[in-house]
Image (cartoon, rainbow, N blue to C red; front, side, top):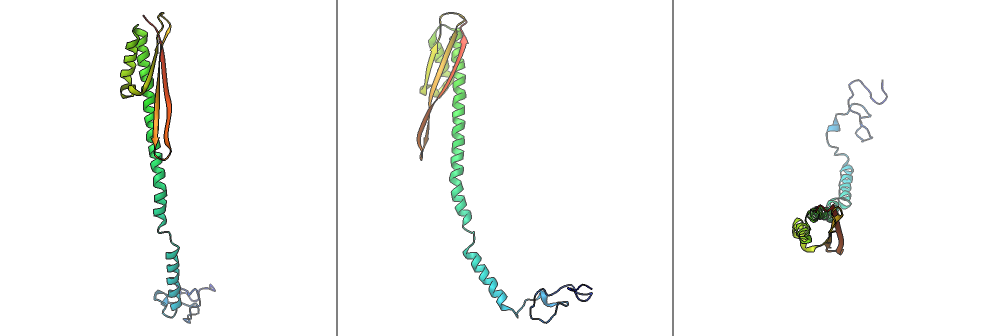
Length: 172
């Protein structure tokens, strides 16, 4: 027979000396509340008060307040990178269009106009340079430079140049 369990019908064993006089035999009173031990209830109340004082109920709000500005800065940075990429692609396209017109027509002003039209609203802020030799077979070149400005409230104004260039052989 098992030394912990006495008797064959034993399902519950009193795990501590509760003063109930069960001696480890079958205990039917474990389902009821121990009124004979009020200090157990008192300790639980103290433990709950201690948990309330050292709890983490406000930490979620603090973490949220710390994370939200970081996420907003990352989102604004991502939007700015997208804007820079869009402007760079627009510059490459306009330079290619200006070089195509410069290679096919001898009038340089048409190449300026074609590059400016391809730039759209960026044409006002872009410096356009067209180089077209008079000799057929030489390279006609269009270079574009755009000053991109990033305005951030905490950091200040950041500006840098985006450049694009294209060249094509003069056909006429």
